Each structure stands twice: as C-alpha cells, then as structure tokens.
Length: 286
Ligand code: ZN
Figure 1 (tube, rainbow, N blue to C red):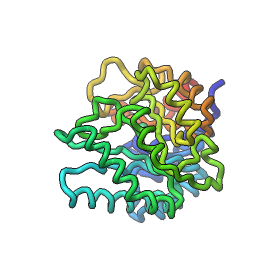
Figure 2: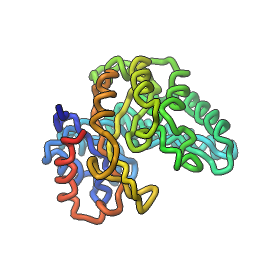
Figure 3: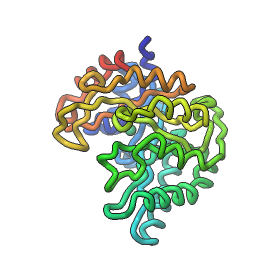
C-alpha cells in the first residue's frame, strides 16, 4: 500500500529555484502534507516569517535543514560551529520544526575517528540548548563518498553508536515521533546514503527499538551520475528499493513523514511546477 500524500514532506532544496512562499503554496496545492525547510530558503523576515508561511499554507514541518559540521582543525572554528548550531536550533523552533537534521561534518586529512569524537563532543555541547527548545537532533549518515569533507558518519551503525550514547528523551506533545523516535538525539535515514549497506534492515529495526528513528528521506540512486552532489534521481529513476526500505522503517515503528529530498541540476533547470507534478506521480513508489 502506498502512503497517503499527507505523509509526504518535500525538502525546499528539492525545488531549489522556488522561494519558501512559492514552495509552500505549491506543495499544499498539490496535496502534499509537509515541508522540510532549508536554511537558505528562509525569507527576508527570517525563521518566524518562515513559520507563518508554512502554517498559512497548512503544511506540517517535518524538519529543519541543516546543522552539524562540528569537526574543525582549531578550537575557534569548533566554537563557531557550536554557536551556529545553537542559532540553527532556535531557527528550527521558530519555523515550527520538531527536529534539526545534522550533516555532521569532516575535515580533509583529519582521521575519521577524531572527527567522530568531535561530532560527539559537539552534540553534547548543544544538547541542552536543543532540549530546552524542544528540538530533536537527527544525525544523517552520508554515503562514504562524502566522508572526506561532509560527514565522518557514513553508516546507520556509526550514527546509532553516537546517538545511543545520549540517553535523554524528549516529550512529543504532538505525537509526531512515537516510541521509535523518543530520544533527543537520533538518526535521519536517507535511502540515498544507506541503501547499499547489508546491515541496513537490522540497523533500522535497532534504531526504532532504541527510540532513535527521527527521519526518513527518499530519492533514488542513479547508476550513472553526472555530479556527486547534484544528480540524484527521483524515486523510480534509479536502483533503490525505496518502498522496501519504507516498509522496514514502518515496521520499526516510524510514523513520521517520508521526506522527498532530490538534489538535481537537471530537475532544477526545469519548470518547477512540472517537476512537482513528477514528484507527486513518483510518490506511489514510496
Ligand atoms: Zn537526506
């Protein structure tokens, strides 16, 4: 059974050329239930105005993107990252998002184990701030092709080992997460990054049992990609069993939005209204 469109949230980066107001109105008009707001799409009036825009459109907010980038070669830059993550958490609260997605960071040449230790320290440093704001922190493991400079956390297991070391739970007054997402620090599972992992199914089950399953992102992996950043496929354009992974996260207790996150120079160059139509048609593959 496909999910209803009400369980679909679209990342504003998926329709990058649109302003937040254009995106929110178009998503809602298409019957999509939710939105994930990216920082670069904040309007001139900032996060509070962004919150008013998405509420006026009647959309739920799945997440705010993105924080992270904790590791750095010197203490000054690490402190700057903490300050920026606290601002990001405040913006998320103003937008009405229940969680911040974290691209955790890596520094070319820094040993990955050291980067992961700095990520853990960074999370520990901002966790009180996040909990006070009622914001969950979702570690997004990124495909290992990004391990040099974007994320030293490449797998669900690495994300789980960091996340489960924080045992705090957060209230969930609107019931957006359920028991599978009860912890303050959890995981955003993006099929693009983890579909190849032979431990994926067991890690999804484990994440749900531990209360770490905060987010689920969908797109597709094209065997031929023109860019390692901006040539992702829409569901059905590649080789990921998106519906199969979706059934695994549901079986693990996940009740949130499936978030459509497609970075694509090809699709951004098109008429965005037609692109949105393709996204809605591809939803049946989730
Ligand atoms: Zn993602």
